[in-house]
Amino acid sequence: MKFDTQDLKILEKALDKLSEGFESLPDAAPALDRERLKAVLLEVAARLQDNYPYFHPLYAGQMLKPPHPVARLAYMLAMWINPNNHALDGGRASSRMEKEAVAEIAAIFGWHRHLGHLTGGGTLANLEALWIAGRLKPGMKVVASEQAHYTHQRISEVLGLAFETVACDDDARMDPGALREILEKGWVGTVVATVGATGTGALDPLPEILALREKYGFRLHADAAYGGYFRLADNLDPPAQAVFERIGEVDSIVVDPHKHGLQPYGCGCILFRDPGVGRFYQHDSPYTYFTSSELHLGEISLECSRAGASAVALWATQRLLPMVPDGEFAAGLSRGRAAALDLYERIQADKRFRAILKPELDIVVWAPAGGSATEISGRTAALFAAAARENLHLATFRYPAGRLLARWPDVRLNQPYVTCLRACLMKPEHHDWLGRIWEILERAAAAVR
Image (cartoon, rainbow, N blue to C red; front, top):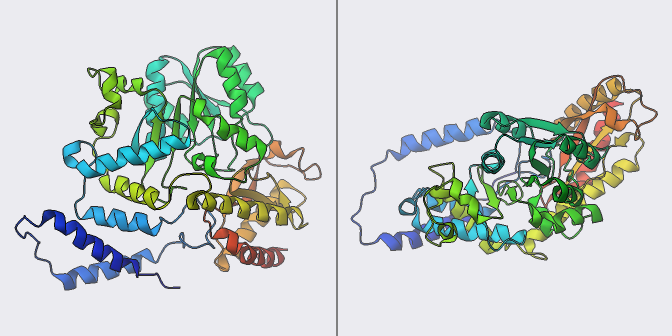
């Protein structure tokens, strides 16, 4: 295949338009040895060939989704200025674009009054959420499910907060009964509800967790870095719909535009339902300042210098593809989920494979058939390699064997974990490529057996 370069003509026209805003300045273009520059860029291109084809529909391994062309072009356009969204004078236009784009993300969750900004990624966004939680609930514990992202435990250690994991049920969701047992012991300040686990795509049961908050009064943070945008999808099962219908009741939300939001790395977003938490960032500003249109974004962020180009790319993408139900962007999410359901149904009907979980979003986890955990894990590794030889790139995932007792009663679970296959069908194109993906899986399974 060849990369499409037609969009570069659009970028050239956009640069001409951008130049019009600075016509009064004397020329200051640096002298460049363009032959040397060309040689270095060609060397870079050669080095970058040593990558998996993350952009292609046959790549379904990790959560790597190509930016939309408008995001790439807008980011590159902004690079001619290189704005810094720490303060308004470092990124006047891009700071306004960030506020508008973040407000549009908040509106997905029904928040029209909020405090929020972009970050370098989901890790830092979650750090800010737990930092605020620790200030509001000092000396109290953070809890998250055993399938939550490992970053929460790591962040808690960095912040000096006690941390405990909550057991999951057989569907990889936080077990409300196990959470209740921990809450009864006291000293839980914050519960992290995972809305789209990175391993399985599972959604913690938010309605049940909200009911427990009524009794125990903890702060509730939704890590929706992966799954947040699925509030716009139209083909979720009822339990998933119930989660997204009530996600606006949590205290803070993290969502990653550089996952399903079609953005380049790194672009995370932290949202707080109560703008008053801004007092922990800026100690001497009045409450109303934190909803002011003249807010310096650096005054509500733990990061200082931040890429204004990320905000420009996000704004442009949301301008082209509004974050609304029934829109083109929402349809892309639904297509990814439809692809996951298609793959799951094929796996269910094929005796060569064993399904593990029905996908709640667009991640499918399954394994080759086998008589023991050891045999299944070995066949998983072989099938993974066989598929890769045909350019189908999957991921492997270690699933707790104890959670498979009910699903696989005939399998000898002779080790703590079973290594399974995992497909992240987050590209809308995966829906159209599912037939070809399945053909490769069939050939790979035949080769393994």
